[in-house]
Length: 288
Image 1 (spheres, helix red, strand yellow):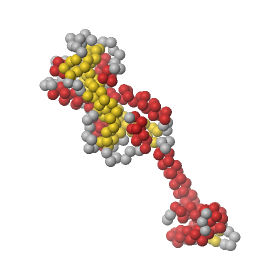
Image 2 (cartoon, rainbow, N blue to C red):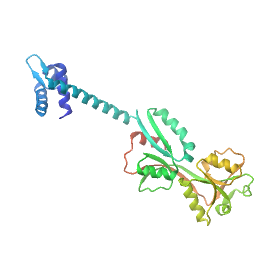
Image 3 (cartoon, one colour):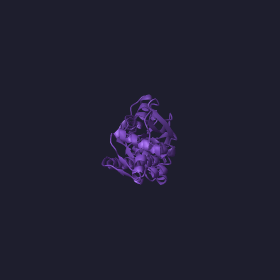
Image 4 (spheres, rainbow, N blue to C red):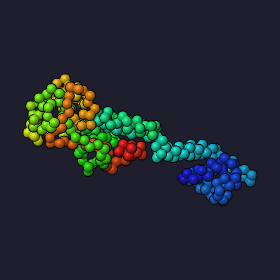
């Protein structure tokens, strides 16, 4: 059965005249008759009783007309819905964001995107960076924000931020007078550190091991403001991205460059060969 058969049938049923229906459809009357006859043959049932002046629906014709109207209405709705998606009048986006990043970059981006596309819903879940990467890989999120590097054989990578790690230290700490501190000088310090599911945890741990020591962990947190407040209370030291350090307003702490330099580069990631909605593609373009 073809949709065109149903369209032609409904037109004939509406006009109760093959001649008028053919005129409305801009086809010949024999072509219309042939199309409806093919539908009747396929259903093995007479749908329209023809006479010289009018055409009347049979009981079977009434049933087909009812279903044909529903089918064509749903087809129209599907077309409108697809047009809404492609024109971004509707849609949804699922995003995984590490907590340490969310408050840093996303509020203003989300606000601007929402103003431009108010009918697109954005579902945000906060996970540690390592869990975000895994969740994008298994399909829980369409996209995530991750700390580089990630496996480029698995993910599409769209870089968004290039940053450096900095030491956050109490202003009365013996090292606070320095402008540059080598990681080796921190081997006896107690650290306010990140939870294990954060990408920063593994990044910094590997750098400490490379310098010949394991850091002494006093507290672990997922909130950069809490971490800096702990440093301000002289409970230990921490290392955070420079862009976060610039937001620190606690006068009890000092921000110091470290050596060797440790990059903190962020990217939006999506899984390769996975379908992305129109809304998600637009969000990636917008965010970058």
